[in-house]
Image (cartoon, rainbow, N blue to C red; front, side):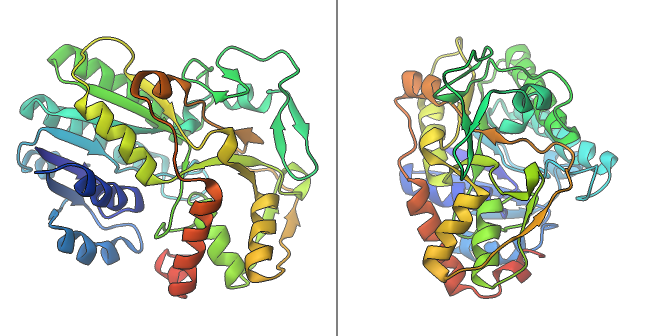
Length: 355
């Protein structure tokens, strides 16, 4: 089988390449990346050792995509991943649309041409900010958590947020590009008869992630705490109680392998995939974990609010569990231990990440 990964030199793309080669015999991987992300160039030697055929190209360029060889499957891991992109950093709004939405159009035309199946890596940030902010929450003292005793809206339960949860605007400019990409991908697959799977992922985290405050927050916090960098609890009274779930790319790989092997054409095509409530942690809890490993380091409090910040979200994996027998296997604690070990071995990692 031949497979193409866009954004192959990013954290997620390179991790998926390595994990897929471990799981699928006879797999040939092509990877394309524009290398614009700080640190991405450092992944090229590892990919070369793995036998990944690398192409220096940009999916925003139709010509670059058209020149790629035909494959059986494409995993789209190329995107500007910051929820603040186009608004408060990470390029202009036009650049965000060109990268996340324009690039997807070129990928879809490629799949149409080569009749390749497509795996879309979407985001938990396609959900309505107002609906997420309005969820009934309780304060545990260390984190915000869903109040399961209160009436809950459609698409959320004690197991987390499902695909049916509201995607009403606003969802952020970033979220809108991911939601539009989902719709386009599913429409292309139906119109031109190629399989499409959409995975709305929680926070993807693991060792080797390029950690920045806007995304890669687990890796950023661990590396920043270890180096005694200034850290901040921003918004929500400056207490750091906002909580997210984390998923290791190796666990996401297991789901992708099962989707590729699934021959059905009908039925559900969109799944939520994340660490789930069992692998959810607040910044305050994350800092306490780092204190226990590295010694005390107190973040500052910043009371200002930022666009698109939400207090809590965790993915409900029940549909993927039902249809594919899939659930995360790597606990958040194990994931953090791996991130910490990588941080200890790479003292310059934040500099490589452009921080």
